[in-house]
Image: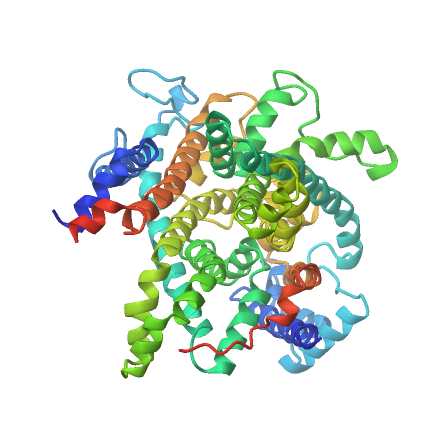
Length: 325
Length: 285
């Protein structure tokens, strides 16, 4: 319980710290958002009027509290460039990005977990070598490059096989489920392969450690075959560790997701953030950056909680052990 | 024979170590050569031979404005070498400082550093880079700062168990009792113990920084405009992929081969510098 309380407190502290950091970072920005909006021919009076209208001339603490209050009410502000509310844009684009992330993670798990287990179970030296090579090569490919190769191989038009679309997302969103799904297949594969190789490496290491444990030897002494002992006892033993690794993989996958969204011209959160950063759309960037980072902090929290729930040993042998240094 | 030579020889003996040493050696060599010589000047373009296929004059062909692809890749390798080495330095210093805090004798410092690392580690590198690039503009320094920060956190988390094991050992205890200062104990007794894990993690960080550079540069928050880098070469060839697919191959291949070499280098170095796994090192000492 002490751990949960401590971790929750830290999460809240991190959120507050992050919001102040994002807010301040974008206020000391050299480009003045009002001047950008007013255009190149604007008079000083016009810029000043815009600043007043957008509330940029108020003291910083007031602006900060106002922004934070808006966030809590689900009001992310009005984009300075498009004039639409940020929250409506975020909603529409999350409907592309989240399915993409879930699909990528599913592919990564489908590749990584079985191959990682197989690499430990097999005793054939050739197979072991092959798995080793697969893990290293898969982890060394950028999502950008694997995406390009997938386009060259499988896309309509320019690809050799012409199986899937390589550009864009249906305009009517998820109304035609099959078409929407088809346009996500190649991007999800591109990010899933790299992440899958990472998960495979960690699975192999964790299960390999578990294979040396007394629990697995005990299971085998009780009559299980090596494969049974590894899959039923060893895998459970390494599960807590795997859960935290998979959470981190998920967090680092977002770079790949942003890249493939741009590469495959998907209207997702990542490409929106990149466009807004390019436009110096201060208000939109501020809310989006904070929301994304908050999402990942929350994810970290969930992973840590799951890790503790899965591993009862952590609750008894906590970090209270006196260290000598 | 000096210890360094023994280590090099043990690495060279294995096929994976040989591959790593050759690729990394070539990387450094090409980077150095590109400082004084590239087949064509980077800004020398030939509009009549844009998108040329590989010929004797342009071994890897030309890009959309007729610039030589090989020259750009050669020049790019020194940018990537700088990014990778600086990332290793930043991540190493930041990570070791965190590890030192995690095994220090101040209880408050210890538990704070552990939870802070746990909380911050889930923030993706790309978000840090985006925020920094909004502030300071896209540049090599932004990539190094973002990667160094993220990989330093990662390093601290992975090295921590080995460091705690060493900190609880009897030789550390006796060192403390004989009056050694905290910093001396850390440098003399704990660092050598975490060195194998540390080196593997650092060489992986170097590899990840190359992958990150490619992604960030493609997104427009990587190296500045007109700076040669592998990510830059990859990103410029992307737009014309359906017309000239071959130009995409080279930069991607170079990135992948280098990252593989860095992975293998870390593994080979770990096995070679640990006296427990390398008997020759014990004999040499």
